[in-house]
Image (cartoon, rainbow over all chains, first blue to last red; front, side, top):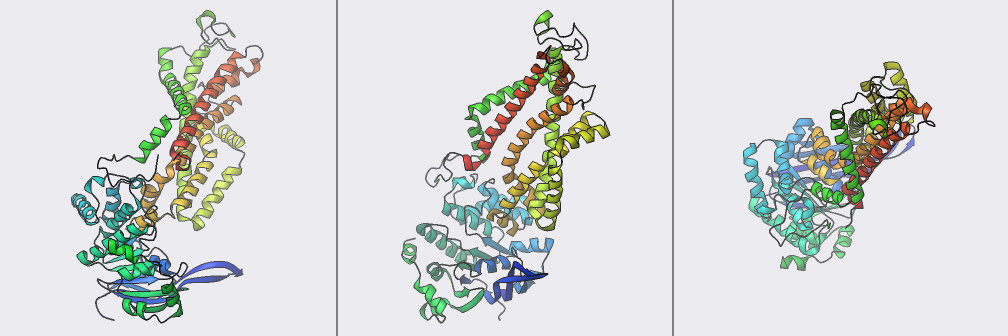
Length: 269
Length: 294
């Protein structure tokens, strides 16, 4: 464990109650069952798996949007799972989330500029008069035009909406950005644009991504390391080349066999 | 109204607020616009009528039961020879004011309880919803009659009695909207950027939950006017204040001899409540995106 690990997840468990089986007894489903990994600053770790494998739950739990049952999550030297109330809200400027569905992740009543500005307003660290300039900077960083600032979400296309989501995630200069299937709701050509944008931002700003996806084609393009999740456990963890060239676990092989081809679209984008 | 207009080509797109679109939808609904005009006329009559026609509605001005038009009394006189037109105009103020105030009160209680229940869930929701159900199963008219009988028939008490029995619908609508919206990703997104619970409730979820609440509130004004009329008809009204229901109630024994004394305020209530319902319906169509034409 080296010092440039920005995120350390150890033995994380998340469970959901099932039906009662008797007086005072409950059955639990362990959606995340003992997940551990480390993520270095400036790198991208992908968590892949089929739906129901617990990858999104893992992401939500790390972001403190879902209760953990046991285990530990450390961002830098902060123990995330121990934070409460104002401390927790304070920490949120160091970690941001990009959501899967660009249609439901933007408040339909806010203008694009207000959506991007929201993290700055919630964190209330940057002086109010600098926030406008920051929003303008973010708009150009994600390839939106300044005159689109006053528009409402429904006036944007899916890809543009996801750019707004990315700009919002960048607003507070976070140490870690968790991308929960950021392109799976988009069509293939737009996926390529968004993935290229994410990669460019990573090189320019030195971002660290935790990248959740079910699509190995996308993962191949984005990531340094890959963790394959199946039924709440990490069944295989390897760097990208090893995983794609020499998959060890049967489940990984099955996933690889099912890769749809996004690679050709990416080369054009 | 296409929801997903592609905007990547033209540079002069207007930043249209969703409410502006709703307003346009409303203006296209002729029944609702006509009802709104009628409603505005009624409100203007209530505000300026008593000033322009300053006859005291309690004063006996002529022989009882003179029919409308006779002796210059446009709507005739009632069983005590009081001017019906003056009563109608002054009564409009009271009926509308009670309707608005009671609706405002029930919306306030309903939103508070519904928002807390729908946002926090768990035991808070259990308690608040049991309270709501308690008020739901109370026989409303009887309960408000008891309140008025106990605390006296003054306008604030009557308003309270109407408001306290009619907030349950708002609470349930607000709760269901909050339960739906709190699971949407933009709420999670807001939380993930560090928004406090108060901010999530008031400035993220509530504005998005408002449309059906506004519709319900509009309809509630109508039902509160009816409710007040019902109470007054039963004699539970402030004897020093004229309202439409009270005019009907005090003239009800003479319905066969001088039917106009009950018909005129009855029509006033009918037209007002119908206008409010149509406006509420128009708001519903305009604010409810599921019904919008695409």
